[in-house]
Image (cartoon, rainbow, N blue to C red; front, side, top):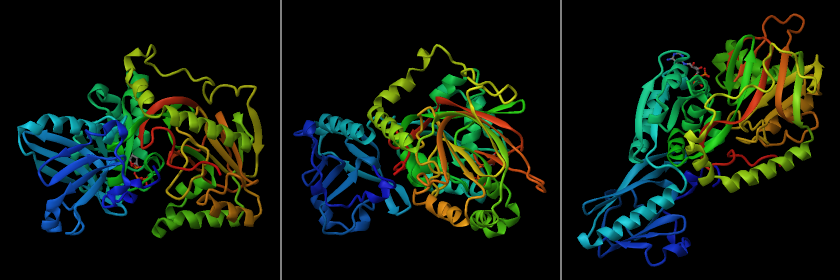
Length: 515
Ligand SMILES: Nc1ncnc2c1ncn2[C@@H]1O[C@H](COP(=O)(O)OP(=O)(O)OP(=O)(O)O)[C@@H](O)[C@H]1O
């Protein structure tokens, strides 16, 4: 389904476009009264109700746009739950209220008599099968809310846009605010992973980063990381996780995507720096991006423009960020990367859903509950002899990532896949002509940078970078998953499919890939 499908799928579209799946012919229609029937179509349930013509639109659960319509449809994607209580049949669904939000709504009918109960139960089971496919129903969700996320908006967004959707979908939810930095690490480390299916972070990308690290500190970390799917309710200033996995930074659309989300393995990146070791799920940046992200605090008054202005000032000044880089390269040719991307994407789409879901449920079949030993050791050991080593005195930007979008309009890593066992690495020289630099920055949004000759794009499995201060420079910046870490050498290696997330399609990011 394309990006933002919940708001594109208009529940009021002409249902004649829907056909009934052949397996359901004959049983697809449930007559709920003399005047009303519910039919399972190909992509939506179709409601035919002659009484609608006699009712005021406002009287009917907000479903009716006009008084003259008798037929309506609700996309299966929007169906949250359905039940039969005695003769009372109820369907809960997400109703789009604008381009950027939806809210729960209810449709109910009283069956004519007891003789229709068996048919109604069977019809409701089929409805829920079509609505959920391979996604788990009634997920048990631990919600962590960063009260300072999104400049203090996270709690309000969760309460007003998310909670009611989760409840309407029959999710079992337990919400808790974080009280200090690092609290989500402690909560994920101590969580009883058998009591939940999902940890949902109402936050920016900082809380999911902490949650992966907390799960990795459990007594059985590999099992914990497979058992618990980590998701984001986009309520922060950087919401890359939700944009990549669910194609939205709207909290209510993300909530719907989580309700319908399919378990998806995610590569995690092991970072060693000094004596420390932790996990990154999104990106590591050294150079212009880290500098603009973390080194422009004095320009906070500008709002989001501070990043763009910071980039332009540094590009025009041809600012460089010297470093030594050593890389275990997997694929360096761009055409080969595109071909690999297409192959892996196809494979992942074929196995998306059922197989992945089953694989992730076979938790106790895991012989090894512990984290894998790192193949390349740590930053304190010698660099392996087969890595490509380079001194980069004029490095401009170094960026390594595991997801396509770094924000809603910056798909820096066009060929990134959730679980291809590679990290995507981009490096750009800081002395390239200014017009090329501007072309590069403006091309990111249009997915044009991958093919630019000034952009070095590689698939790698490990690297070490040792940044240096240039003459006269006082402070340097390194950003890992958007957070500042010490300006010291660090080493990273990818561990395939170690983490688990929920995604809309169970296979790839909500991005088209390299052109
Ligand atoms: N109660 C709290 N008090 C202070 N810091 C907190 C609290 N809860 C979480 N944090 C910290 O806030 C940081 C940023 O969180 P998050 O990414 O969710 O929000 P954000 O709005 O995107 O913020 P930022 O712009 O700072 O990245 C996290 O690294 C986390 O450690």
